[in-house]
Image (cartoon, rainbow, N blue to C red; front, side, top):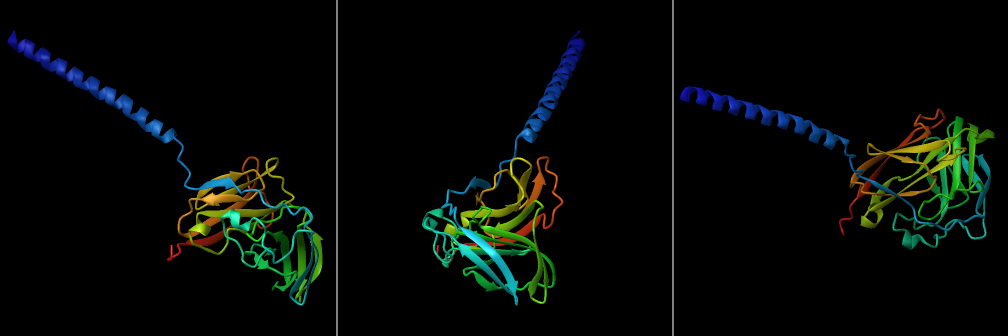
Length: 266
């Protein structure tokens, strides 16, 4: 009889162990699934740029290119090339000490910053897409129809032989660019781009790939990027439709690599 009691107790112990094992097996996958369903926090925070002087009357027109030299006519009651934009000290981002300027973009190349209305720029013979727009001193573009000229041009022998308006939806990359030094310039970095024939939020969006992290933008405005690491960074901008499909248009997508550096004196 004692032997039977021992066998019963042993069998009961085995059943309890099996039950505990099943309980552990049932709860563990649930916890794992819960972990997977949690969204991964973004490394980088994007926030709208603070409001800037609008320069509604600023105008750039009459583009000429001859003997490898661009010439523009710049107008505006308040906007002047070479002047500091009035709120530059409050922007807390990279600012040009040379003042307001023209951003000249040729095809997919980084922009040229020019502080006079006439300047030299080399364009090889052939077809090019050109965009010139007026910029504030801290490199924010003026996003109006009058403040830019966008053309598809044919170049031969250092001059434009044919120019036509661009009717396709197009995206041009502007900032960030180059090297940023010091905490004041690297804590907040401005992301700015230029659009033609593309109404964000209705039919188009901009996919911003920041060091592999995707942000979808549906408003044409500049953004502060916070959280970028010191060192080399890469941004790819792509014009997409509402479903995220890449728009088949020239110069799309566009990628830039830029560098953030700490100031040894800080």
